Image (cartoon, rainbow, N blue to C red; front, side):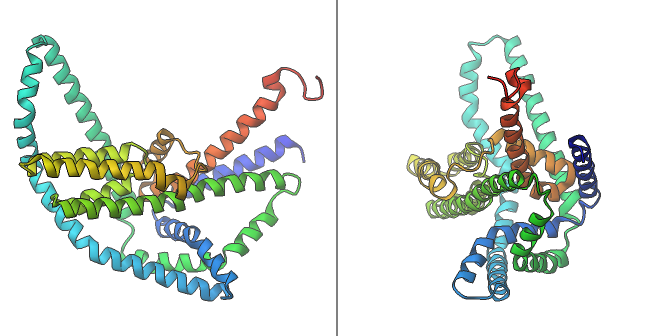
Length: 356
């Protein structure tokens, strides 16, 4: 079979897969979530096998433990988070009003040095940007809710996801071996090499970054709650969750936490402590957590990651968000492989590889 025909067959297969993925996006969420959990805890299952447990027993123990801990944590934290979210939403107008009273004198002083025409242009541009940003965020949120969360009912979350996790985790090694047996024999070594790179990228991000986000979320939530910051649990956990986007997530948490602190506290000491908590968390992430738990294997640029998440949410709702990171990792590895091959090809060098 010629190389062109092979490429055509692979391209058609990929297109069919993407079409099926789009058509079935409404029912894929529990299966994708189960696959993600299985991939996340597979090293634990391998370790338990090394200690003498059978794969089925190890899988049963891990699956039960994981979902019991997850459900218990959600049942404990969710009512508090819901209460804080409702309270925060109700107090947002008051926050804006008090912040405006603090900022207005500064703006008024600055406006003395700016002409009225330029000031109007700045205000109009800021309003337009804010409106556009809120519109984008609103559309993304609506697409995620309508495309995925509305379809994932209690049965799929509590029954399908644990079942999918159990069976995938139990048969993970068998599935990997079966897929390896389907690879074209001539290209199998190259494909395996790319799969290893994809696995390292996903392991670094999914397992490593998830651990970083969990540690930071607990640190921020506990620290801000001890200081007495209103909605500290919500802000802390939210900041930890957003920490998978370098610099952007911690910055959003710092801004929200600082705004609440400025409105809530009348003294500078607790405000400084709030800022110190965020700075400590950011430094711990940069110099301790990320180097130890993630390393340098990710290879996902923050801009590429943000684009993947927004594109996934827009195209396939909640399922698209779940698939965004794996697809971004796969595409990133394939692009780097293609670029490496291009730099070695006659298309780049201008001379055949067998000539000096």
